[in-house]
Image (cartoon, rainbow, N blue to C red):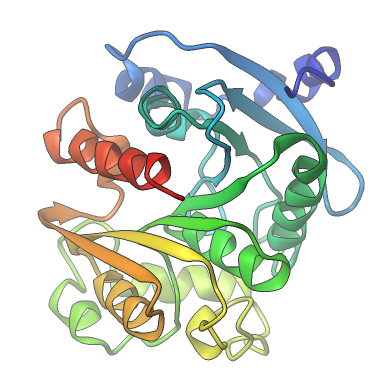
Amino acid sequence: MLAEGVAEAQAVNAGFLSNTEAATFWAEGIPEGDEHDLTYPGGDGTPRAARLYKGGTGGTLLYIHGGGWTGGSIALNHRACRLLARTSGWDVVSIAYRLAPGHPFPAGLDDCRAALRWLRPQAGRIALGGASAGGNLALATVLADGAEALLLFYPVTGADFDTDSYRQYAEGFGLSRARMAELFDLYDPTGTHRADPLLTPLNGDLTGLPTTHIIAAECDVLADDSRALAAKMPQASLHIEPGVTHGFINRGRLIPAADRCLSQAAHFLRDLP
């Protein structure tokens, strides 16, 4: 389906396996899949890396990695994307995008929107998905351009650092409240976009969004972001995985809950009407 651009992708993707050792560790032990490196035209017209995970004819999930808008990679989300494709019957297209602080808001979002425009003519039914900042970008892309479904893992949805979960899990649980405040400052350095729904989707009208499934981590500063999002979206279902921390979905080699939640996410895609 997405065979074009493979040769060009070899050059563009040469460095996309950032944090290669970590990526290899987390992906170890999962079955091989039918996968292809591609490129898509970014929001500024520059080719950007993508990886296609063949899964079936159910549709295509455009997957946006996390990393606080400043990091992350296709490689570090390899396990999740491979397992989603393998168990959902959907193809998964995982993309790279411009990162802050070198490319602040809305550069990364512009790339995600460009990826959706590129994918639409060749993919049929499309869902958007992502984790953390990637969930934020997926949600913002659908707010701007629409899609058939949303699959979100512990997304960033607002900039309120005084929620119950921000206070309860402020330190000692991985992602800290101070780090989230810093990441917002890196992504939106002037602070002038904090009320923009394309940065903080809780500030927008969410009633017209498609069927959505949200998977959150209990011990996470962002847990209340997911609760607030689900409360504003009657078409959304929410699962909060007990006892896990932010970022767990890619750590299935050591955290069994990760693969259970990926199975749940695959069922959501497979059961879409």
